Length: 304
Image (tube, rainbow, N blue to C red; front, top):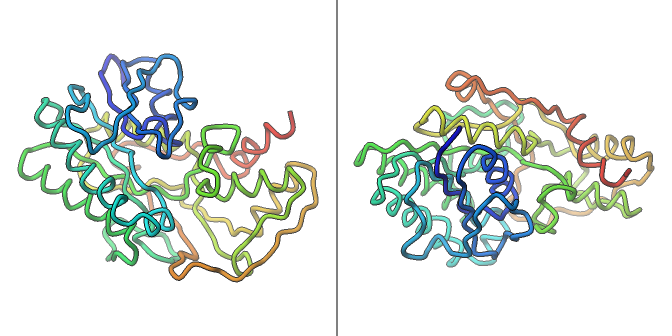
């Protein structure tokens, strides 16, 4: 993508700042964030930062492309702030897209979630039945339905990306997320500091860990191809938490055992695995960062 005017909502957050900073090399990029979950420290000098909420009027939507990543982004986060989270995740989506439409922008790429697939060890395709078991999942599914409305009613191109367990590590833009950061980042930081990472259950739960660099490429490609509908963004490989801890210990040269605790969450996805065939066929996207390399990248700042 080159020579475009771009708005990234949630642009000071984890994925949003990585995207905004990447695109700023060849485009005019606005990163909009209310700093509830993001931090301006994540935003590069070449990006215009705007401290605003997606619920506000007069957003800077006079752009060529909107990347809508602003959201309350986890099950626990949404359950603890149900009303406000629903306003941001649903009303904020409609508000942003409607203002973009009014300003003549007809290309939107937005964040959905893979959580709606529930717990599966088989690859999850986009056309399988899904359901909302949490408020978080309901809010992301609502985005997908409103995206259908804008597409059918106004002829806009809206691509919803169902991300699978995106990570980068505290050496990147994840540190500000704290307890909401990916487990790869949290476990690495604990082990590097000689602390036992806390695993729910017996550590056999699995995730399709997808490096943020691959996610950023997928987001950009979705806009370049003006995709419609929903698309999975994941590697098609999964690793259990016990194996992850072993890989981190090996990379750091440490020998820290995990602490196992009873799972405190009433709704918990035990296993995830993406089927990204649809995205690959539409754009040619393939993940470049395998998990072994990804763990090495997360661990690198602690070895330097």
